[in-house]
Structure formats: structure tokens, C-alpha cells
Length: 290
Image (cartoon, rainbow, N blue to C red; front, side):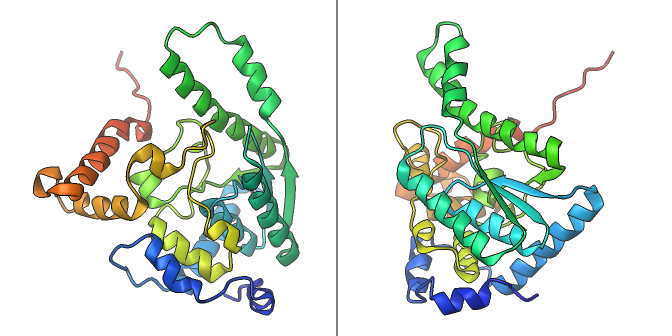
């Protein structure tokens, strides 16, 4: 597969290849020795095939200004199908908005099949908060409002599905979506397909480097962009992604926290607790017998 943006990427020298070692140091785990040109080709082919099978007309997704959505939106663009990238801020920090805009600019410069739209959902979010009854559980209300941000974005994306027949593309990776289930039910998990769901976070970074994702996104600390205190993913989880990748591999091999000491014991406890408590998010609603 010829990557349409590759020549422009090399001419503009968007990514300094000395970054290679630094990126690998962000998130460390035993390498699966993936060929990222082949990975990109496989995902793009599957995007094309699924679009044909679904009888839809294109793709849409939220571009957040972080690594996962940057990679997925680039892969969608490489499919050649119409791809609507959307900036959907809700009280976002300006640097997050700027990164998302810069990435969408880069996509538009490199791909003719890119459409873009920006819908500020802040007023909608605030209006929704006002109609809720008085909070009886302050912490519960806080979490409800945090997750409402994600669900409002899903509503905006599926509005485009209704209008344009564009599939909503998920941006979750293997650790977040299938390890600790770090997503909002009926929010960022309300998607039609999950192109990078088989990639660990470190592999998403490696694929991003191959695709030429802009440096400001490569170096942004991962966050879900939902919390008003700007908490990063690691702030919320109390573990780094390299630790979670290690724990996911060990857990899948039958290891539990009792098999480890020190920090490894604590990381495995964090991973196990999130993996087991949040597993309900992946279950289909039960249909009762009559």
C-alpha cells in the first residue's frame, strides 16, 4: 500500500527521527516486532472492506488532540473514503483544541477525502447540568457529569451517521478498551468499529511515528479530556501505560498480584481491580426468561 502522505511527511521533515528512541522510552514492554507498514496496510484494507460490507458512505470520529484519535483518523483518511473529523470541545484547554486543529490541518493538507467540523458542546453540557435535580451524591454527580461529556460527543457523532451515513470510528487501544475498560459506557465506546483495538499503547505510538503524526501530539500526555481538573490518564489510573501493558500480559498469562512484590504487586492490583470491576461494560444487557 502506498501511503499518500509519506512523501510530504519526509519533505516537510515533520518528525525528527531521533525521536525514535525517546518514544520507545515512554512506554516499554516486550516488543511483538510488528511491521508498522504492514499493520497500517492491514487496518486500512479492513476499513475499506467493512465500509463496503456495511453499505455506508464514509467515516467520522472525534479528533481529541491526543495520540489514539490522531492515528485512527489518519488510517481512515488513508482508506480513501470520505472521512469527517470533528473537534468537539467541552471546556477544553486551549492547547488541546490547538493540537486537534493542527492535526486536522495536517490531514486536510495531505488527503483530499477529509471533511472537518467543529462543534463547541460547552453550552449544551451546561444546559444539561441545569435541568438535573439537586445532587444527593456529590461524587456520583461529578462522575455523571464527566461521563456526560463523552456521551454528548457520541450524540454529535451519531447525528452525522444519521445525516451522512458515516460509520463512527472508535479510537480505543488494547489496554484501555480491552484491559482496564477505560471508557464511558454509551460514550466513547458507542462506536461501529475499533481499528486499533489490537494495539498496545506503545504500539500506537510506534504506528503514529510511522504515519508521521505531528510532534505536539506525540508528546502530549494521554488524557480522556473529561475532567475539569485536567487529570491525565495516569493521574486517574495511578499507573503508567507501560506498567499496564506489562500487567495485562502477565494477567493474561495467569499471574495475579500475589505473584509479585513491591511496585509490581501494586500495579497488578490496580490492573486486576479495574479489569474485573469494569468488565460489565462489555456485557450485553441480559434478556430475561419468561
